[in-house]
Length: 102
Image (tube, rainbow, N blue to C red; front, side, top):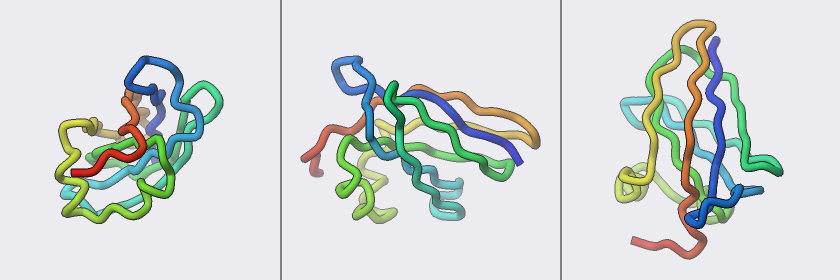
């Protein structure tokens, strides 16, 4: 196992407390997990070794209703990370603001 951790900030640079992080295995959809950001916008989740793409949303309801085809529209706001066995990927994400529709 490995770990992905990091911080989520708002578009203004403040911690995005309570935002939702979506972790997708690449190719997209091979693995999917959700986790929440804590009081400082921090998050951490255990994952199998592999390639992942992470997205963050301010609105957890909005985050959960997106399917893979819609997530592609937000790919520019995602971050790619590779996690090795016993490794740790660390990322910084900007939360997609509530109400963002494409």
